[in-house]
Image 1 (cartoon, rainbow, N blue to C red):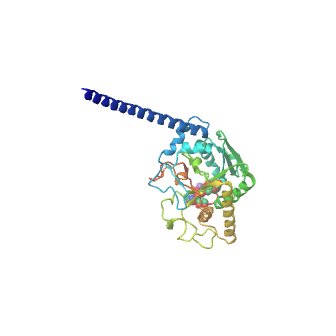
Image 2 (spheres, rainbow, N blue to C red):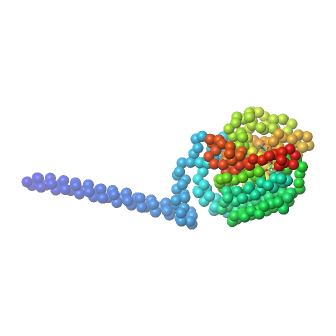
Length: 339
Ligand SMILES: CC(=O)N[C@H]1[C@@H](OP(=O)(O)OP(=O)(O)OC[C@H]2O[C@@H](n3ccc(=O)[nH]c3=O)[C@H](O)[C@@H]2O)O[C@H](CO)[C@H](O)[C@@H]1O
Ligand SMILES: [Mn+2]
């Protein structure tokens, strides 16, 4: 009987040890969870003053990728497509830097007709919530429409002389930009974008586009083989690119970056175009040809997909999930000073 009693005691003891272990295990797990929680909250409140930041910072854990398009170049510059960035997170990061984005636009001759749609749509989609100073160059300041600017957005109008050739207007932008950056922008802005006016915004164009030197892949050639790119192929031009060279074909209708880098870009293109004029040659696609030559030797640090300059809002391509900025249809012969 005594042995039976001992046996029962031992079993009871083992049972209690087990129960105690289970209790201890549950308590330990719970404690671990709460301390972890407190720790991450603490880290966040060290970094930021806002209250929702814990939620925002955890977005980094989301997998962002596209498998149908390349999102990085061979020199490790990101290519920005819808689905490769977290807009909330990237806005939050840049918000703390108090940036100003200078944005230049030219509207000479009949091109003032594009201003209303350009500016109104920009106010809905372009760097909303960030400081933007538009510099508008026109030969008809009286035709600039009244557009209500959002908070922190300003429109500065500059008069420039009229020109007889649309090619000269388009190419002449480089010199005007070069001077604007050198003489005025140093203490006024952090980044600059130079955009065509015959275009309209349909979706977000925000801080994801900012970088030291930013090129936009031309909407007609993003999917084309290199030998189809319309680079300048005559060796007599300074814009010449041999057939076996070149990475992407960039549009002349949108580019940007830091003031220093864009100043160097505009200065170089202006100088190269002047050499071409002296040699009586005009590059096939004007300043766009020179821009492509520049990007061959000065690789952009960031590339924007054709979402950032699409052909026309109605054109379709499987890779384009969002049209952010798009050329509007225009009758070149009717709108340009020379056909
Ligand atoms: C589809 C196509 O062929 N695109 C080419 C064409 O673009 P685009 O047909 O888009 O050139 P464009 O007529 O828009 O001219 C460029 C910009 O110059 C300004 N502007 C031009 C003319 C004028 O009378 N008033 C005025 O203000 C305006 O800001 C305009 O957005 O030419 C560019 C410059 O060479 C590039 O080569 C483009 O690849
Ligand atoms: Mn255009």
